[in-house]
Structures are given as C-alpha cells and as structure tokens.
Length: 321
Image 1 (spheres, rainbow, N blue to C red):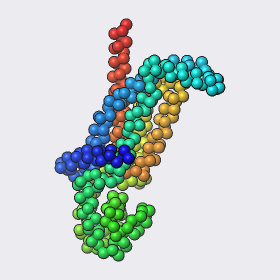
Image 2 (image 1 turned 30 degrees about the vertical axis):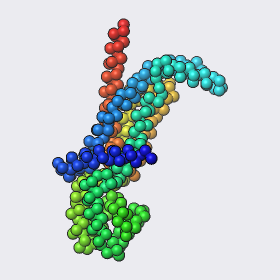
Image 3 (image 1 turned 90 degrees about the horizontal axis):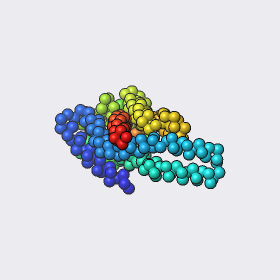
Image 4 (image 1 turned 180 degrees about the horizontal axis):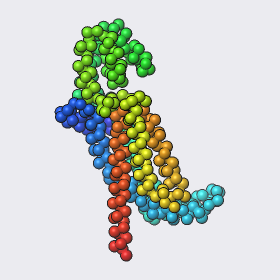
C-alpha cells in the first residue's frame, strides 16, 4: 500500500524536525514540528501549485468560448447534441493546452500524504524517537503495576472511550497511552497508589512535548474548549483557502457565473469548510493543525502566484502588440 512508504518517509523528516526543536526546547515540540513540517511540504508542492494556477487562469480565459458552445446547444438534451457539445469543448481546451484535471492534480497527489499524516500524528510514538522512548517508559511502569490494580484503574477509562484493550499486553497499553486525556491520567494516577510517583514525571514530559496551545496533538480535539479551536480553525481556514481559489479562478466573472463547473466550485466554497470542521473533531488534533497552516499557506500562494502569472501574461501581451 502506497500510504505505508509515504508515512515512513514523512515520519523520518518529521522525526528530524522534532529532534531539532526538542534540542532547543521540549515545550510544544510536536506542535511546532507540525508547523515547520507543513511549511516544508508546501514549499515542495509549490511547482504543482504554480501548475494548478496556470491551468486555472488558462481555463478562465477560454470561459467565454465555452459559454458560446453551451448556448449553442442550450435546450438540446439528445445524446448526439450532448456528444457534439462535449467534443467542441474538448477541442477548445486542446487548442489552448488546457486540461480539466490540471486544477485537481495537486489535491489528488496530496491525498495519500494526508492519509499518511493521519498515522504519523495519531501514532507519533512510532515515528518520533523521543516520543517512543517516553511511551516505552510509561508502558513499563504500567506493566509493573499488579494486574488487578491495573485493570481496576483502567477499566472505566477504556469503557468511556469505547476501546478494546488487553491490559496484559504491553503493545495494547502503549497504543492506549496516546488516546488518554489529562483527566484520564488524573483518574488513573489517583488509583495506582505509589506507582503514581514513578509515572507522574514521565507524564509531565509527555504533556510538554505533545501539547500545543493547550491541546494534545495526538488525541481528538472534540467539542470542548480549548480543543474545539482546532476544528473551528480548520473550517475557517478552509473557507479562506477555497474562497481565494474561486476568486482567482474566474468563478465571479460573467462567464463563470454561467459555467456549471465554476458554480460547483462556489458551492464547495461553503461545503468544504463545514466538512473539514466536522471531520477534524474526531481526527488527531495534529492533523487539524497541519490542515489549518496548510490552508493559510496555500491561500497566500494562490493569491501571490495568480498575481505573478497575470503580470507575466500582461507583459507578453504588451510585448506582442
């Protein structure tokens, strides 16, 4: 599966970034690493964003011609007329070296990366060495607690989170560690007696690394404060990013107003933010931070690249006169 190798590669980069940040300060290390990681990913994808914007501008230029073809076949719903309209529109696109897929390519390429990032942020202990070592130490302390005490301390927490965990298995315990909140840990340490003295310093290190702006990067943000900030920010910045894209795509032009494709983009301007906001409620908060920063960077890229491309085209037109 393609996601596995991508996750391994990105995990190596993420681990290196984390180690650099952690060497300076362990506080907020995961969150800061996510932000820097997002910047690097966006820089890598800049050529694709440029290609996307070139395709969008080119599509914008041929909108009047495409609109004429649509009007020519307006009201003709028979198969032959629809095929002729499709062929004429394809010829216009081919003659102008425009591809309908050009604008979608960057998004399609980023999908496997988003899937890979889900695993990286949810299982940071697998990809980040320092986090893994901390989880191993916490797991060892928990496994040294008598089984009856361990089960008693964890049973209510496991039921509350609707998880399936074998408390006798170290692998299950290690995976559970990434899913517990501060409140869960407070409940747990209150129930394990003197073992709390061993685990508390390790939990302090864990929280210092994993929390950013008061939110754990490895657990779901949920609907309570301050976690709710993540899905709200993801939704709001998705709107900003899609609005920047539609505004620079010609969707607001007279021809764009009558183009079904452009109108679909406008609809997505409102649907996508809602979808992303809802989705990030139940995804690792780190993924929400990645998406938020990515949206802001891409919105900026869209505006700047579009302006640069339009200036370039204007110079070529003036030179050709």
